[in-house]
Image (cartoon, rainbow, N blue to C red; front, side, top):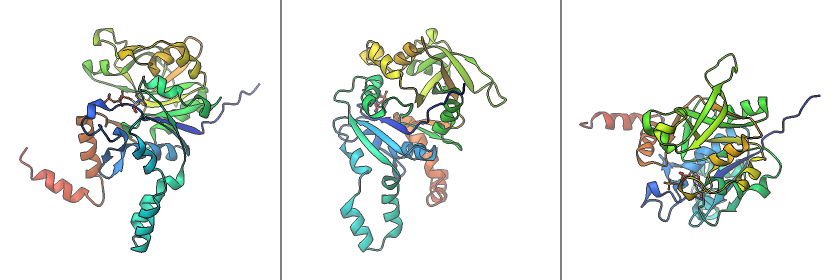
Length: 297
Ligand code: UTP
């Protein structure tokens, strides 16, 4: 009997967090709208989803997040002004993304955790697999990170999380996995079958230095697991705890993705990403490089 693996059509963007690491910038502005050079963080994630073959976007928002909705809307006055002034390049930039996606919004009334945010999309997602993108994890890679996870999902038909090795004590800021390597695409160092996971472990309790990064492809049975768990680390409903619950009945894979990840929700990570993205820009890179070189560091 051939078992059909259902396709992933929807990507969920939890964006209802408080962004406390980036205060005061995030007091009245969503963290997801902070620009790397000139593009908001969330747009990098949405473009990654599009390039991975997913056009249906669901954004979980909360209070003070209307700028995200405005960003992906048609900006009538702006478009008319640009058209009247003959600024075709800018018009294309403004129209580009909103033209490419179907976007829906769901509110998370209180920031009760990432798991709680994901549960808010249960009705909209229905009984289908879906991707989850945390847009403050910006991933620069040849093959979009979500596409890399989808390739594993489409082979095994099971949930897949993105993994990255982190140095030393840094693991205590992440979900850490206990996992065994699985042969995949003639290699044995990227794909893992997860045995267990722990959210924000003490370094001495961490099962490995493999951390879960903000990209997931999840099967819909994760919703029942989120409903079944109690608040965990930080008093929040954690997605990692739900996945640990799911693991009792279903296999979950981890994929050590190819690419560079920037933690743009953290000030230093954001600065690193800004510098590297600016250096790579054809219109800015040359002058910016010359400027950096003459700084007395
Ligand atoms: P973070 O752990 O980065 O939390 O959330 P945060 O609140 O956004 O930022 P800090 O740590 O206070 O600076 C990871 C992702 O989960 C979303 C966030 O928007 C971010 O994309 N999230 C988190 C929610 O949507 N709801 C929550 O209740 C918590």
